[in-house]
Image 1 (spheres, rainbow, N blue to C red):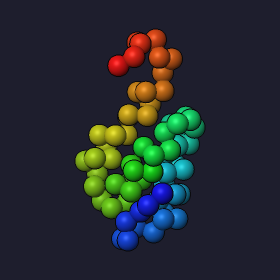
Image 2: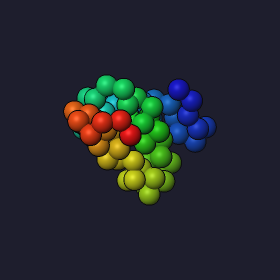
Image 3: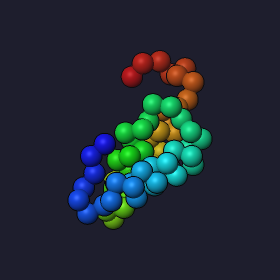
Image 4: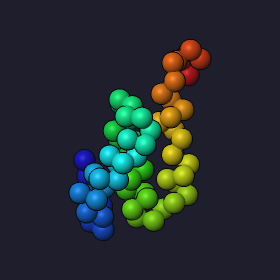
Length: 67
């Protein structure tokens, strides 16, 4: 994945992994965790807080049907 020049990729990778573990290791959200890690590390806290619940909200049983 691409990262910005101001944030080393290994830092983004480590933070994304931490976020993934905190959310219970859901499958299929790699890009979301990566982007959230980039936002956090760049200091864009508003966007990282807004997306913090997105993977958890979408990892349910799917009983609500398609969106």
